[in-house]
Length: 103
Image (cartoon, rainbow, N blue to C red; front, side):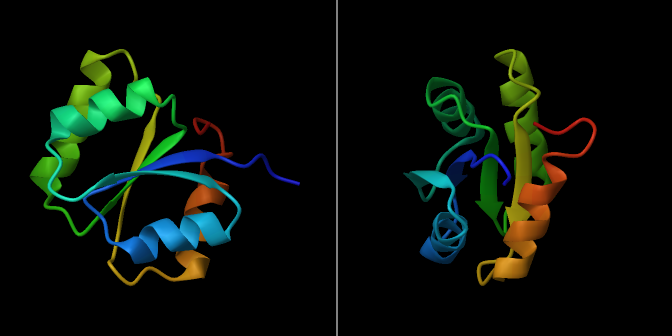
């Protein structure tokens, strides 16, 4: 059985959080309209394995990754999901965390 992950859900709707929770993962919900800095701080403080975002522009994704790297947390995986993410997409992402270079 795969290890259950601790995932920060930020700037994403409840569907993403629900899909992750339904898959058995611990979800830390940071809410909407979080800045990249706020997301990185929360990710580090909560010691998460990954960050799930929803429908954010590429620039915001890059800023989140840069903010994590600044805090020595570049190993935290960041993924962007569509607002109506499927259970299959969540499972595929979680599975990718366990590939070489993953969690």
